[in-house]
Image (cartoon, rainbow, N blue to C red; front, side):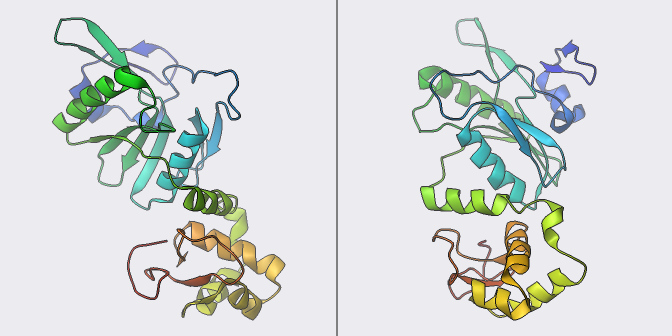
Length: 243
């Protein structure tokens, strides 16, 4: 079940809908709940991948949106765009709305939930996860309960996300100079100062780190002396896919 572009509810066979419906273009099929006492409630995430807002229901979901928004293989994102219905072993109708949908470059999709802790949602969530996994496996997609990030990489991603917008790419000619300055790994501030005024240049460096044009070890806290290198450098002195 999903909402069409004019907001009408549509119920369609899952295998057919998955092949024909652009879920990444659809609004939430139901609103994210507001839970009293939580420090962070539903909101919107501006996606650098799509240039549009994505509905987010929790801080844990926002963090997972950051991860997917940086993934070069992700081409579309949406919050709660579809409700799946099925019958359990006793013939009872069950339903579940995954929190997150991601479209990949090869056309496949990911349905995901973003629990703040492994046991979040209880038995109902775990039973739904089994049903979601089977439904996605049938059509060559994936379903995952995305594990929360550790504090340090989550904080680093949140910082870099503040520079994801194209306005932080800098004035014409500045980005090529930044990439050239870090063609060989060097400390963050040292490389920025080699290009110009750090107040101007650091925003461009962070933008490049968000988009993967530069890389560093995001498992360690970001600071002025953290080594930064070119795309493909693993942040620890080798080459690989980190960053």
